[in-house]
View 1 (tube, rainbow over the protein chains, first blue to last red):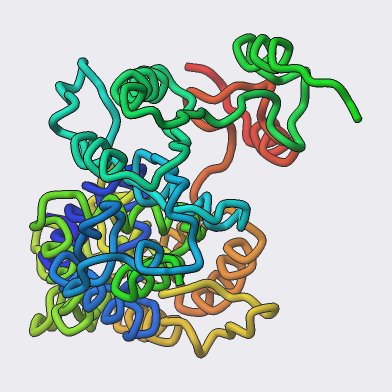
View 2: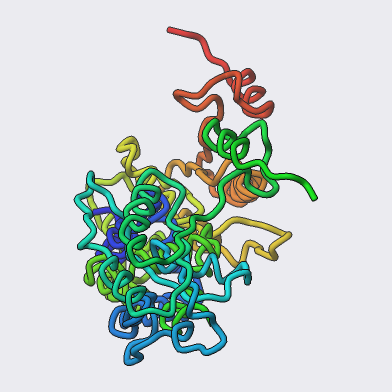
Length: 201
Length: 201
């Protein structure tokens, strides 16, 4: 035993976080030891009630405060309820909100179809999306799952399920990322950028 | 406010950790939200009593369990008390212990001399080291501060302070790291490796 018990248990817990290996965990633990007392305390308090203080919105399944039935966005009358953007997880909502370019509502699937990991349609909030659209008032569903194999498969599945409801289903555009470099773009991205080319006006 | 309050406070606390930016903090927070409940709880518990459960060894100033005066290494009769290895921080003790190649005792300075950051000799455990050596029974002090500008300056200062006590002061060897590539070694390391060359036997 090189470390005292209390530090070892912190390192063990930190190592379980994604992207944090044994060395980073040790470094973080010792940083926390030297940092002003309130950092360790703040973190501890924020973690203690993390799950009990949060809940999922009953409408879009985004994360919201516990005790609230629907999230801020679902409750807002300023957002266009006819436009639903389907994303994989709550972090994607944050990314889209940061752009300020979307004024509709969201639907968080809480994952993506993945036969390899055993995730099927029933493990995601797909049934709830279909029901939501079937209730009417929705004109377009933007499928904003990740531009990955699983994301594409999920998008295809969703469009097949939504089609009978007579709703327009769209997918986010693919091409070169803004500020990117053509030279470093991978083959598939470049192919998509070529086939998706548009007239300059 | 995109995130619920409880998640935002966790993200804010995580962002204060070194090497964790806003994006990593969000990702970690959402990971903790989905991870089995006990991870957030384990982390919270380990952090809550971090400082109250640890103390500094009165002899070498390494970190040890609270309520203990001297650490395991200082108390061990198997370790050679005539050999003291001076390091900057507790993590360096761990690194040296992992090698299994050192059987002496340690002295943790708890920092390094740095005029830029306003760290002088009185801010480190230098006085305690001098006193420890002056008490006698020490034949060699290995100065294992980092091979950096500050580490070298600290080593020089220590050797000047220790010299009058008639103790041998040594410094860790410098050269090419094992498994390293000559092509990628920086100029200073290569110069050191050249000047420190030794006969093959």
